Length: 578
Ligand code: PRX
Image 1 (tube, protein in one colour):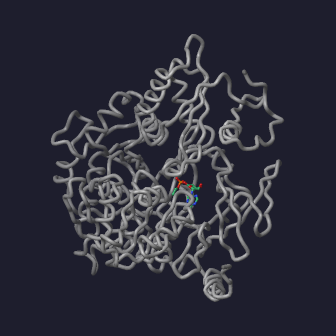
Image 2 (cartoon, rainbow, N blue to C red):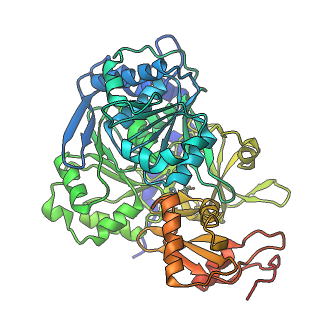
Image 3 (cartoon, rainbow, N blue to C red):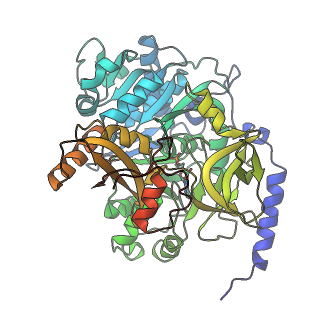
């Protein structure tokens, strides 16, 4: 039966009214600011709770892979991050210098993030499942001064390439007992010796705080720079979308190596004074349901790939687990299938609220909200302080706003606090994302008459695999380092579980024959360099690649052919080898 729209109207119109009257000053009034003026994320997230009513409240509840549980109160987290800030001071790290992390979800990763912010260094988390190549490239581009990692990850992924990192002065090994050399130091003894007091220096809201790398469609990854003022967005969305209240138990399953794991796995929950559950282990359906039940999680922020894996595992959670505390389930990062929402209503006893944002937006910009009618398949409504439009880019670089319901590129009017300030060292690439007052997201979407935003796809060749962004160029470059590969093109093919699967097409160099052994060797080679999160899962040998006359590979054509879709405009196509 067709659902009537009348009952939705009051909630929607109230919401539109609330949006109109909104000002960012009202969010600032919910924060403290530094005692001497200025704004620092770590002060808002930890120190102000540590000196208030929440001092002894559990801030971080860490669940070890082996089921060890460690708890850190706001006071303890404040002291541990102070110690880390003092370690940085002792190493001579200056405000604005970059501290990278490459580690699993260990407590020290959280101390390092908050301690770096306190010291006004720029924190740049990397995903531990990256291979050496993406790691070294990001460290180089970001000019990493300090790297916080573990013995295993350092040995396997960084040590051999250290000579390529002249700016990297110190490596801090979380799990080492003793220093390995003058510049490879054991972190825990350093933390133990450091003072637990630290006074945050003057921090301008516009001072850089975080650097998150994200993939581009052409070229190498871009470093999106975020500033301390972003905390306003984390505060606001933590209330509007996640509905966080001090004392809540909250779990965000994202790894801090990606923006969700920092904005909503570190900053937003602590800013709201909740107990933030962190699980060291990887996905495991049984374990995840146990965590939800045993930890009495109230708000759960996860991702569509994980939800699809839960849908497949055959467990009926409500029959075996007490999820009565669970108040809100949300997801981000890729399209959330409407079937997943239907499944969740049955399986979890409530729908899943889809949220949309990007590394560049720094925080949730569009979202479904508990008080608004849910339209499965839609990403929801632009939040207060966010103006969204659908634009078409014209040949001359100008943009035209499209009418309600028309498909085009999703754009946001610039000016929200957590908007990235620039791609590091790349003013031209930064400028290309803007047209006048509009930031162009690279996503194709449409907005319906009631303001709901519907995702259509990417406007470029970027691949989303298991929720992780992969730039085809980065993968193609690594494949071409294999002596047998003359040319490579990489696309994302639809996959029912992980959203998109990375597939490579390779043209072989003279003297190499296509066979399974070579296929396996090239895939293994790519996995070793790029890591499992980025490397192609499939490979096909081809005689030639479709290219424009100017030599640009037409990835969309490869994808269309693979999927049996119309090839679209091929007027610029150069002759292909057959
Ligand atoms: O294409 C959109 C997709 O993920 C991109 C941003 O990826 P990243 O910068 O890695 O940040 C991910 C988490 C914030 C977007 O440009 N995306 C994100 N959320 C959704 C989505 N696609 C569809 N539906 C969503 N809810």
